[in-house]
Image (cartoon, rainbow, N blue to C red; front, side, top):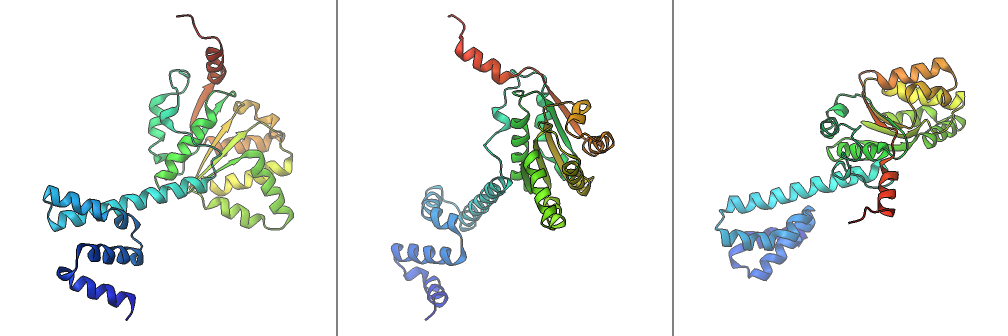
Length: 271
């Protein structure tokens, strides 16, 4: 007798089962059907349904909704993990009072991820310690949780990967792989000078995504200062054009609120 047949016979004769036997049959069925949440919650849910005098339909709805919600949570967690963020950052943890340059209303609107659905760019420009990376990771996390495919990468690491791919004659595959993400988050753009080859390769990635998939960047330098990173003026202008067309641009300022917080902790005000 197969496992399926045994379960079917048990369920067909449910009235004749003891409570432990019924629970064992449900447990085995949930394992076979891969319903871990129902398997873990059916006893507590059935007890609550009995106390609250739920109908059979109501009881079934409670179990199925719990399974669906838990599956959605697990999918979101997998997408966030796959994005490769170096640490957890959340919009709710950002101190808008400490950095008034960052418009809270705009950030909360961006957190809805409509700009990702529309394939629009996002540029976060400001000095170190002003919250660029925090916002980049937090908004990327929101997009991943909303169901979008997200990838986070440091600019220098991305360029190095592209150069290696070109040397190994797999550049097309690498660019195509980055093109499959709904949102590409590039951090620390502008920290290092790129030679013409590296800048050309990065330009190819940006061009491949133009007006079809979102790019979000964080840079410690204004667009006018990008000629130090992209030494070819024409290429620099083309990259700025790709990243700013129809983009949201947020300038996080020049005053490091992290430094201010550290000083405040080291020199607390007298009571």
